[in-house]
Image (cartoon, rainbow, N blue to C red; front, side, top):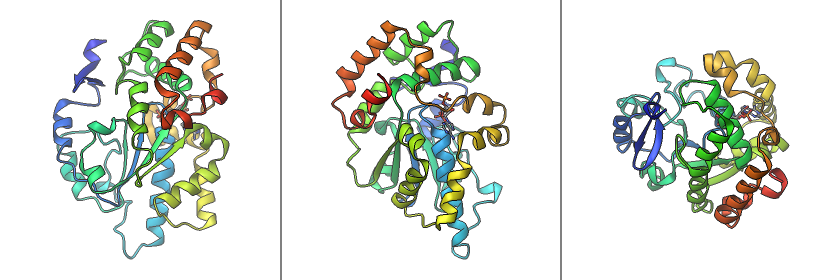
Length: 289
Ligand code: A3P
């Protein structure tokens, strides 16, 4: 397992998709105010909200076709995860027209400073920790870019101690909590998207100032249903598709956690997250009890 992970500034990352050279190069990344940034801990629904954002941006660009370069030109596309790619990625990104859609799992203090300095807007996506752990376990054991675990118990211990690719869920929520009131930051939860996708999509479009007609918004909502995305998964995500669009539900943790683990997570949440701003948004009582 150790070969599959490396440590950078005290946080583990998978060697299969990240490298110290890319992290070094990332420091030179120049964010733009128009960038559309999605920040989320792994398995919080990044690909879901990422598709919604990309769809909103593409549709809005089509509405202003004369002013914007075509976003469909494949040469102008870049893998959307900020910290994944080769060291020349950031030079290529400089040539991309606005608005660039960028996903990241990084903690705010590991992001390039220009994101905050240049006032790029950031959508912070959070999901309840029990479902994140459950989703992470199935993903990591089903797919090989990440190390697999012999047992769920072994994985649970790694999750609770933060020895995970991209670091600790708890640190992630604590650190991003400090940015919740920034004027360029909006937060959204996986659970509120599940509850009312149409409303969430509308709020996201407003925050990033992406004017779409009601019909266009509805089309984005329709294309982002779990079923639609799962059916399309092989085309959009290749071999990873099946593992990425697994179940798409709330409270699947009940099939995996035993009572001790349940209590251990409750205690950890209470100690570390309950009084943080993002902790309050997680609605722990509703989704984790
Ligand atoms: P599950 O493993 O619980 O099914 P990420 O993209 O950050 O890796 O997150 C993956 C999780 O988001 C998976 O959770 C996946 O099923 C869920 N997901 C992806 N698309 C979704 C959709 N359209 N609706 C609901 N959940 C979705």
